[in-house]
Length: 120
Image (tube, rainbow, N blue to C red; front, side, top):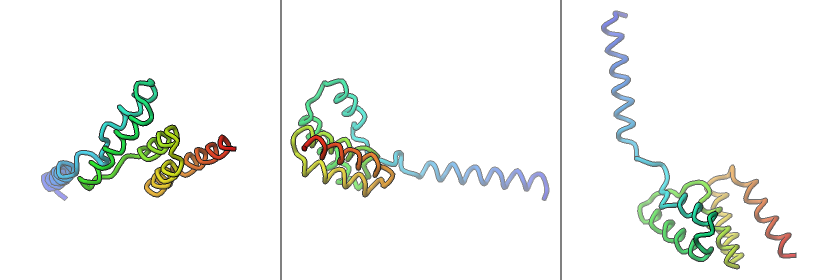
């Protein structure tokens, strides 16, 4: 293969790769301030109920846009439900986390087992 033809193929490949990246969505997940919510909670700047309202709003916005929520979103929402005394909603949120991110199963199972121990 000639040097010019090889360079042309490489250039075409690079242009194709860049075009594919440019047409891809800007983010995979709809974060909706999720990291800010977690940080705020860890700094004790927001109550669990305030967190629940903000996270539920973010989930509704993501759903309206047809976007996925990031890993940990439902897990954190479940913790906030639990801290607000809403056990059934916590279990539901944790089930959603496991359904969307099966790799979270050990962590979610730990949270559920810990919750059951503390109830006894």
